[in-house]
Length: 396
Ligand SMILES: [Zn+2]
Image: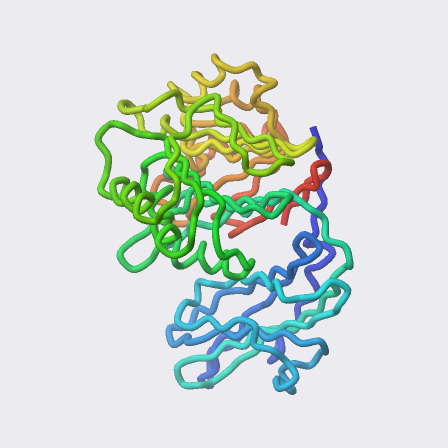
């Protein structure tokens, strides 16, 4: 089991300097300036994120990039690499245009409806020359109001891209349209090699509908639920069919050909679940890349879920360095017996910050804490990334 943790943030999150005074101000009609952070991802992409503008008259973010410092003084020397209008919640961007070996500076301009601007701190970064072939998982923040869910993007060592779940949607918002597609765009991903909808609940498949409608997807794995289901599930199945993606019912014992460097196995469910707790129909996926493994559990709960998997498999089959905790950190999942078998070095929790269920539950956090397992959670950390070269594990 690999166990080394390298936190990039300490190296690449540079000093914060607000460009117009020591503290943000909303007076004089100027928008509240954001605080910009940048990190290097996979030695080749620049991950930019910034504090959200809280102003009611917010209009636009403009992310500027330049080969020299001092962008605010002379923006004509810089490129506006991303313009985001009308959505102050979209506060991350991957810059895939940066060239290895070059140095870049970034600053975020915020504009309001009155046409006034404010500027973030300016940060610089130098890209190294090499580009390793990592397995990388984006644990996407599904938060929006009371919405929660799961949404993970997997980039394989040979450059294939898969989604496991896609968050929820409402009448005015979709995790697919508003979060996942912008992320894919920023990474230069124009099609997906596959999607897994772990089970028919809307907080897992709701956002996938927009993704299937918008970009080509080669294959979709579904649990094959045969019982009563929601209109969202019917729409999901219809959208798979109309998109031209290949539909595959994923069940225990299948191995998936995601990448020649990976071993990808489905551990659950058995054929065609159709009754009982829908959470326990969740597709479980175990991915191994050399010395490092991930386990993705959907909303699998302990009773009739984890217990069945534990009875079927030996603990060696379940071991994983990174555990995507079941059911958004509910206390009804991720039992002590489950943790004894999986023996994770890191726990990742997909959960919305405004969810009405109290997820993640204190009881579950205590189970992880008492074992000394570091926890990363989307409700507090936003979208986070775990990447590995097959030996070392990096979280940022
Ligand atoms: Zn869920």
